[in-house]
Image (cartoon, rainbow over all chains, first blue to last red; front, side, top):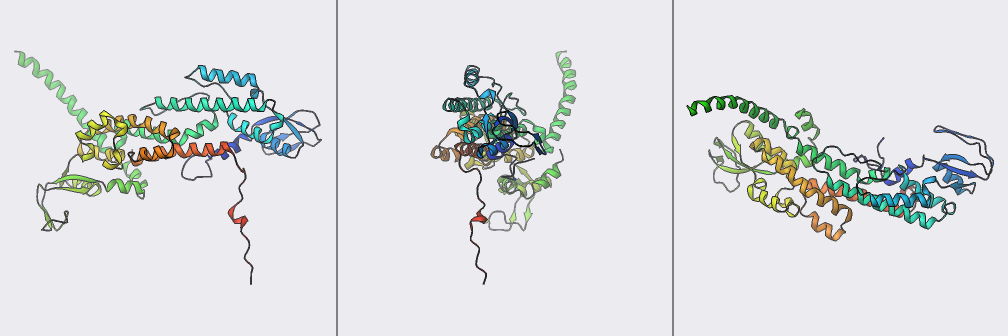
Length: 216
Length: 192
């Protein structure tokens, strides 16, 4: 699966990443009665008033729009947890905190569709924005470090963060890989490399023989 | 790696064509009749030992037929290398050779200079950091001045970083999630 927005680059546009994030499950509290819904991605429901149920985010947003439910913000979206994560991100410059893979997209979708269901929305929003900015900056400093590598491993990066740096990183790694491998540059080069190796090996024993001769 | 397939794959690549247009200084080993390399020359022939500049694609073919020997182009000479060593980020590589890296990779095995490969790698390493930081932070006015010294490959890299960052910022600010297709807005033409 590749992004539909630009056929030439293997890149998802941010709305496409958001689309994928809409498959994440959230808990809703319906205020209506409804039979179970059978989708390709699974069965959801049945829905009873005041009984929490887990549904995909897109369904939650659609129901919320019609005033049929309230969305329960996920556990990680609490102020305590977010403050902890933010502190962790600021203290540890090298590594990333474990956050939900789609935290940027989910938080934005919830802020857009269910602002009245999130307690302390201003605080939560600014915390998430801080976390996101700190992490993006960290990604950049991380990328500055690598040179002449053909693989990078950064743990706990989220979908959107990966997506933002993907086109740059892919190209940069390709360039590093190409210039670091003289064999890959052109076939001729590898041939001449091998030739010089052979001649060097041949010359070595000759020199070794000559040296004792000179000493005599 | 299979060189022929990779070459075929890039046959219609406009960048590939432009790279091979770069001029290379060559020395003729044989005199050639009926060719006019230099437009100001009096005769239609090239003498043995004549030094001329030919496009890469032509000099490569002549080199394979042992008609010419190829010298190191000006963009890889000692003077440029010293400048790169001094401050790689500010060397104007675009004016020297817009395809500095790709051209270097092509010319290195032919002139038999293995230091070119290493020089390309170290140049890229040094300039890479600047591209990264500028791509994500610099304002447009600063960026356009900075862009002028980048080679084509570096510009691609810079634009890749910048466009994905711009797309992300645009998404973050928000706006209409569903856009109406331009076709829908149009009014139907009355049919006579």
